[in-house]
Length: 98
Image (cartoon, rainbow, N blue to C red; front, side, top):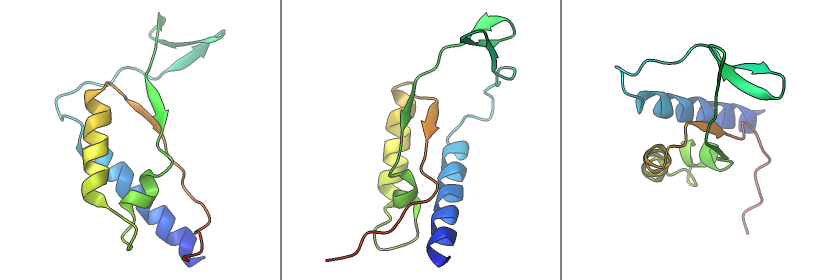
């Protein structure tokens, strides 16, 4: 249970960091919908660039394996590359330390 709380907290921290990296003057589009087999916003096609960021919760964790400086660098780099969508693992099993 404690591990789940740690990972949940890490994910919330990651989302907070990512949200704070957004410019405050940026206007967000209307809600993305599915029309047939395509994503649309206001009846126009919507395309996005995204990636799996499976280790993001680990980097955001307040533990020995966490590395928030690296997390910020990687989020900044992804943003510069135009990545606007991330899939982050919210929970996982901790590996045994050898």
